[in-house]
Picture (cartoon, rainbow, N blue to C red):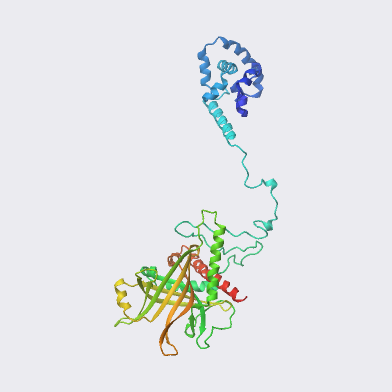
Length: 474
């Protein structure tokens, strides 16, 4: 096997083929150094010189042959066995007698280059089939006009959601405030989409109340949005102030909020989230990188006893004691709930209105629960609740069936207890996450995150309200 075969990547010939092949005359061959480094103009002169030198090398001893082998790169045993023939010996003797020229490079450089060439050839052979391109080459791609770039089926593809690392949310903005879906339009003359006025007002209201909350009380905060109806106290029916879009109603002294929803609408909104869960599982069944479920579900069964505690030289306290009906013996927990503020959102074109409430829920010591239970409760509520938590929007959806016992007398004059069942829906936002956004606004590191969390929270409520409104319009 000659040097040209090595450079061209030819496989070594079989023993039978090699023995039967005819070798060209030495005056038509170049030395290895000439093949790699020698100029083309000196080819004929070098070949004549090697022809005369070959005749002289017949009388040399084997030591000179060993010296010539040291000038070549080291090869494996299989390569040496395949190339140990008479032709290789003649080439070796030619190189030994040849005088080094000024244009020749050191033998170790030549050897390293040959070794790299051999490794490259072997790696190409091991690669197998040619590599497939992930997209067609540029000359075979279909051309689109500039106005349709980045479109799929005539529409812009939705932007991929940022990856959510384990144990926290991404800090990337949720909404793009500077771009529209169509490229020929600008979002505004300033290049920025103004925030929704209702979202900005809610964010400012939350911010103003957060300023007054001490750091040690943050873990007791509850920020919830309840579905219901804003009722005019004078008229006795739903508020009507002559508007057709959502707005914040501030004259709270003239209204009351009824937080119950219709059973049909309650079931429809719950079925809506079940549909989202089913769709999510079908789309991500074969994607191990995604969570198995869209919502984390928790079923609870509690009986709440509400007590109004009035003690001397102390302000009145409202204590709620909850009994876990799934445990035997039952377990009791108690909290003292302090309402901070309420904000009413009137949605005249939708089925329900909203009430956003800020409260502090302080735990009550266990030794105080038993003395409180000996008193008569102000109200009793038997709650069967399904809680669905959606971490990417830091929102918990609570669907609650509330049974309230009422004592009344029948026609015979006997006292009987009947249960009135109502259905409630409330959304709670993760207080730790909303406080994190609040702190970023205060230290100036991020003025957008806090308002985005408020908008996401309100969007979840709107999605459910739109679904039940569509059902009512059928």
